[in-house]
Image (tube, rainbow, N blue to C red; front, side):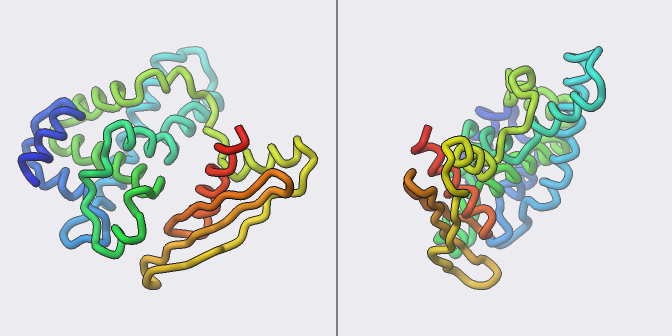
Length: 221
């Protein structure tokens, strides 16, 4: 794994890592043995926030704090971090325990977002703030000027769609649960009367509802 990971990191983050173990941890879920990404995610979240906040101060010198806060919240949201993870093709590099693999953790928006923050934390420790800043600015790209409000949550968007079409609010139903208590996986079906239904899965009921709403919105758009 070490040779492949080093090459993957060089291609996507622009460097040859000095301490590969940091990045191995950043890509390791708590279900797998060894050090996992949680501590690095804690650090990376703070690094990301500081870099983006500084970037916004530079780009919008006359904007008030409230507007800057809205932009910051939009840019560091879990959904945006998960988008970055997909663009980096993180999923094949994740290290998961067998149960987590069976439960589809590879597709968890929460996990993908956390891993990107963990990779930022690892990069900060391995190569310093300048390298972390350069990576974030390249990976986030024009999002910093495109996003001024947090992406609308899929459940809220579906609720608004139903109201606009004068339909009853979406109804959510847990269709299945699987896995052990410490790694429970939920499948939820959402229905909007007269518009259809869709299902979604996640590591919590809330995440499954979100994915179901996202799936139904995709069919309605």
